[in-house]
Length: 150
Picture 1 (cartoon, helix red, strand yellow):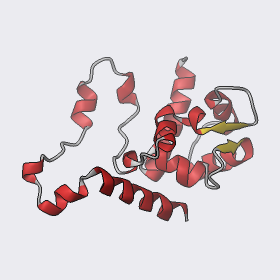
Picture 2 (cartoon, rainbow, N blue to C red; picture 1 turned 120 degrees about the horizontal axis):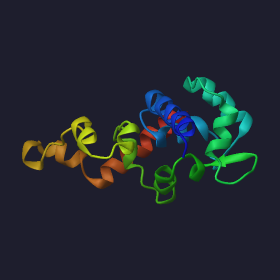
Picture 3 (cartoon, rainbow, N blue to C red; picture 1 turned 90 degrees about the vertical axis):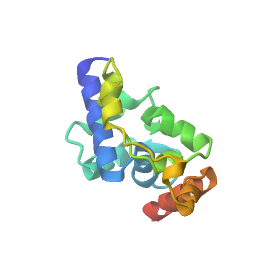
Picture 4 (cartoon, rainbow, N blue to C red; picture 1 turned 90 degrees about the horizontal axis):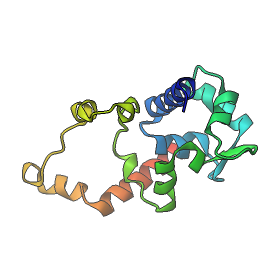
């Protein structure tokens, strides 16, 4: 991927995360509001404006497409988001996304420095431990997604 393409996609992802907290929320609550599984170019252009993306939305739309067609899918948008939707695993809604530039760095020092330390079970109260359970996280994520889409 060339530098201009990388910068355009990273800038767009940054706008999504700034506005919605995660790429998954951005897809569910902004880009694919009607839950059709696809976003047409005219919809995408309008949502880029709403997200505050400063680049050319039409060019970005073409850069994101894996195949030439009149729409993009969640697979074009982000593979991890597509997996979360396919597996009905919305836990990533609850975790803030890290800066995408971390993935481009050769050593993991930057991402380790930015990641928030998780508290261990011995440092949590009973209620906090209950909130950390898988089932509770999924319920909270689905509720959050539903609230943001309305």
